[in-house]
Length: 392
Ligand SMILES: [Fe+2]
Image (cartoon, rainbow, N blue to C red; front, side, top):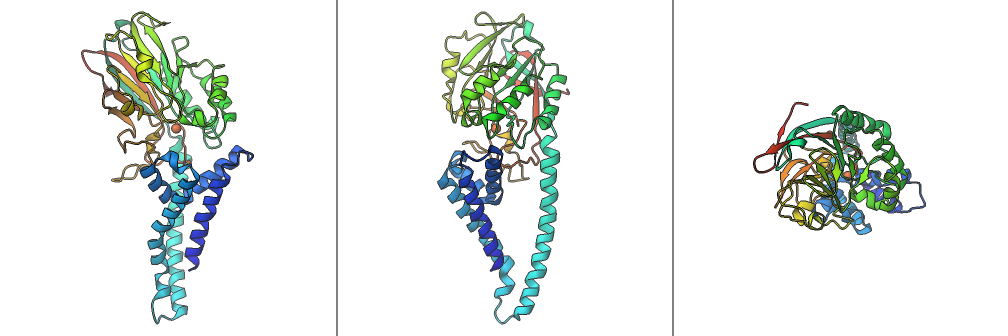
């Protein structure tokens, strides 16, 4: 019974930590650590509740309780199996104890060793193993002057106790090596506290792009959760331009304007915490000019249909951070299953590109889903939007 008692004590103890992590008087790093422990220990329940009732629900007190309860129910068969030799009728208790000890030792040795290796790799290696995903992006009606335009997409910095500037700097350097004309950052600049917006600002100011004022920023759910007004105040002092429920026209001569002919770049607010309105931000635009929309959450494409959007660029899902062969990604903060995990996806009325993002949220690891810097080289398409991989 000892194993069960210890496991259940850990589950409910970590649930208590999840409750305590709501106390704003505690330092943000400590609150994040408490929340991370609760997620790790209650992982099976968190996944189940998140996938069925949504990841916003997991963050509520009832969500914590539901996750802990489900974790206990899911672990029960495994605990019974571990404790099974103790309950065999007529067995010599000494022998049974030795059996349990041997089995427990073997299981814990293999389990701890294997998990340690996987956890170490996913935290220290894969989490920082930035991959460049380079594509030719074909857009209808692209002006000749914008042929070959290089556009970098980077989302989900999640600056905080885990994603430190030193961890994210290689991604900034990778983006700069792409020699971009424009850089799009659709949100989640911080993870746990508004105090980290200054770190995001420093990173943004280390980006280089050819077109003046060509770094465009949007808000994610974490920016709202950590004070979007603080985000606006801090990030508006960088070289980045906030593009939320606003639009700008990149003309064929590669300068910005508010009217004329060229490529329209529009940004909408976050789907979970803001008031995104794709139709409103594109209202009145000429139908024969291409439109590219920044939206943090790719589910926006499902819930905000529009007659012409050539491409929506999003982040938010982080590719799920962990990919299990056959099963896919156990935790994906989307209402549409695995559809918007990552890559080029056809939505109900327009296509979306979902980047895996740079930082991590929830579990501080990546496994099978390395972080991504995306490069698009724009070309004119005779008809619909399409992308093809390009050797960078
Ligand atoms: Fe994110």
